[in-house]
Image (cartoon, rainbow, N blue to C red; front, side, top):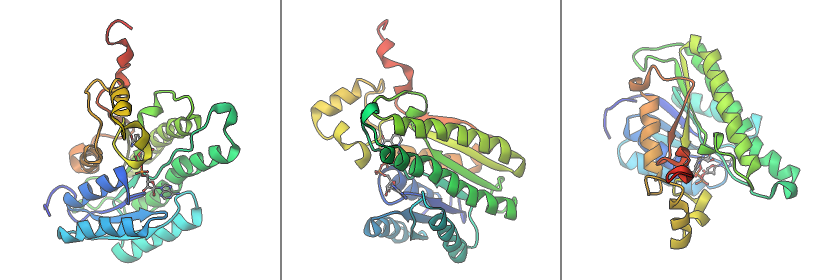
Length: 268
Ligand code: NAD
């Protein structure tokens, strides 16, 4: 385990048991953070991530909570404070898709996606911000009082037919992130978002599991490869570190160029 940039800091990663969240949890631990691996359903998967970290000499524990439920989020933060005393880094990563044609989309499909992807980020960020403000800056830990990293998507800017609930949640995350960043900056709290492109995880399996699907996907990615959870993990570890201390209120895209309108590459 390196003694690097996040040494001794406490990080909570929501949905840390799978895909991007797992990649982020491992990267933060590698950078020296103690990591709380939140999960909603899969305790064993979360325990595997914890074991991976502790086997490498790091510290971690898993914590169950549905991020869309206020009482569960508050109980999770209580547990974090009980075990680790405070928090330095929140990675608001949990999210899901419930796809449907717009006219067929049920209110339940809409509410579930907004509830987890957007309201879940609000609920977790609010609890983290309260603790950052209570503790203030401790410069033995970091130049900032706390860091909030919101997992957005290229779909905070690219409209997505058949997925209007998901794209709306990500557009909402962008403004949630920016407005929090503006309000919380005087407290020395940094708030940023990551906009992943196509990252190979269970959420988009049908887009990469056959060679045909993958080739079709690659036409949308100028850099011509699908992203991996480590790509996002390394970015999150850097954004959480003091190397990124002057960055707040913006989204960093990690998308192999997906947001470059690749359809216009040969004159449109
Ligand atoms: P994934 O399905 O592997 O992981 C999603 C995680 O969210 C899982 O750990 C799941 O348990 C958790 N989760 C779902 N509902 C929850 C709830 N109510 N409470 C707590 N946790 C819950 O997918 P992923 O690709 O790793 O997605 C992670 C994040 O990255 C999501 O916010 C997703 O929108 C975003 N994202 C992914 C991609 C991609 O290409 N994979 C691209 C852009 C953005």
